[in-house]
Amino acid sequence: MAGASEDRIEKQDRLARVRRDVDGATLVLTSHEAVSWYLEGARTHVSLAGPPVLAVRAETHGDVLFVAANEADRLIAEELLPEDAERVVRVPWWIPPSVAAAERSGVPESQVAAELRAARARMLPAETERYRILGRETAETLTDVLGRVGSDQTERAVAAVVAAEFIARGIDPLVVLVAGADRGAFRHPLPTAGVLGDRAIVVVCGRRDGLIANATRWVGAPVDEEPLLGVERAFLDASVPGARLDEAFAAGTAAYARFGFDADEWQRHHQGGPSGYAGRDPRAAASTVDRLVENQAFAWNPTAPGLKVEDTMLRTAEGWDVLTVDDRWPSVEYEGLRRPVARAYGPR
Image (cartoon, rainbow, N blue to C red; front, side):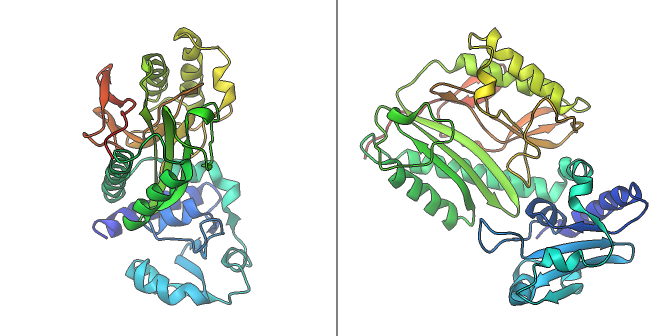
């Protein structure tokens, strides 16, 4: 994994700074996002719905990895950096690695959650490159699949093809939502046997190398998307290095009324926020006071009835870099940024 060792050195330094804030105590990392971030994108799951199969104790004299014994050989051969493979402690399958890692004294991850989010917020070179590739392939998958669908297909049939294409590319389909015209009012539409009809939405969260790409696309009848793009732009303009996340959230939610929506529209669905090793890291709200940094990833997703816009983007020194982009998808330019619009159903 090119550049992984160099990124890892910086991550060890960042974790050491977190440890200094807790008097040098050992930190116990147990979540998918923390462990996968620290171990350079190692796949930490077996079941997508299950807990991690390994945990990390970050200690003064080095890291110790507690790994389920029945998973250790595979992880050493296929997932871990060589320096990590040398520090594995095999844990019997009947003992959760998180429990084994916490048996000795140490600070649990939950106690320093905000500090760990800050440690992983600024993307490093190797993980940025992995994220760019994931974002592009996520967008390409949506273009390929949705260019072939028709209004008479079912939501489940479309979801099945999206998930299959993701898996073929080594992307975990964490979320695949599909709603046809009859279900467009639902904000998290799990796919059903209903048909797409005149207009349909597809929402995905795909994970590879620990990183999660989030994107939304529409097919079928066009609508006026410009007002919602204005709301999105308010979120983006406020998401600048040095600002707080709650400030960006307030600026975006206030824009709903300015662009002709109900002033309380933001209360009907979450608005997204920083992204990376968690779908939202964290989900933005009035209570999230994380300080924003350069080279941080975001996936804002303002919504209104029958409308939603969402892409994964990186905030660089030059501005916004859309990661989930495919030039084949129709788009418009809004305030200097190309944004996706609904794609007409293609020939089948």
